[in-house]
Amino acid sequence: MDHNKFLNLVESNPVIASVKNEEGLKKALQTDAEIIFILYGDVCTIPAITERIRNAGKVSMVHMDLIGGLSHASEAAVDYIRQYTAADGIITTKSGLAEKANKLGLRTVLRFFVLDSMALENIRRQAKSSVQPDLIEILPGAVRDKIIKEICSIVKVPLIAGGLISSKEDITYALNAGALAVSSTNENLWNR
Image (tube, rainbow, N blue to C red; front, top):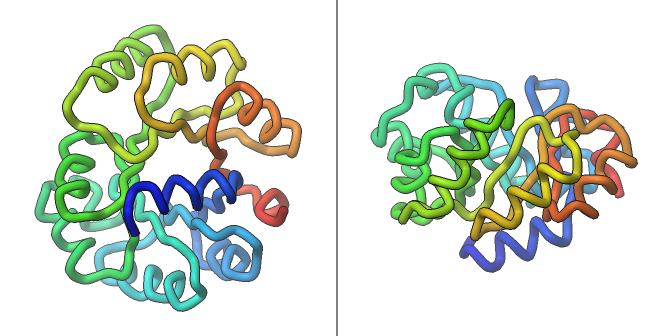
């Protein structure tokens, strides 16, 4: 899937299902959510998980930092995802992995934990970097709109708000502040 098609899909599906176990995956496959963030599994199970998502006609994004056997990931782990899974892309906190994934044609989400002013400075540095992911995700997503607006003004790529998104109000709040989409493990939010 190319960059523009991916962004259009995210924009038309502003609630992304984030799954952290098998039960969550089963539920996500039954919902309207067209994009699934995979936050569990290991090097042995991730090929089957991504295949199930692809067979359901949905897009799968593997959180490299949370997958057993890939969590201390090197560029070889990105090669593994590309060659041995049906994943459409990766999520990571490591810009080097996002850069490698981009080169391999995978879609990329670079995640930042917005805890303090140092985190904002890291986002500023990333925005000036030659490494540009398809999307940036900030956590927690249920932050003041001032922070979301500030980050949107800094970065050159669309923003996803994730973490602590627990209500329709949180979704509306993040989208109105400038986020393109939200990701949530709350299955009650996955249907439109």
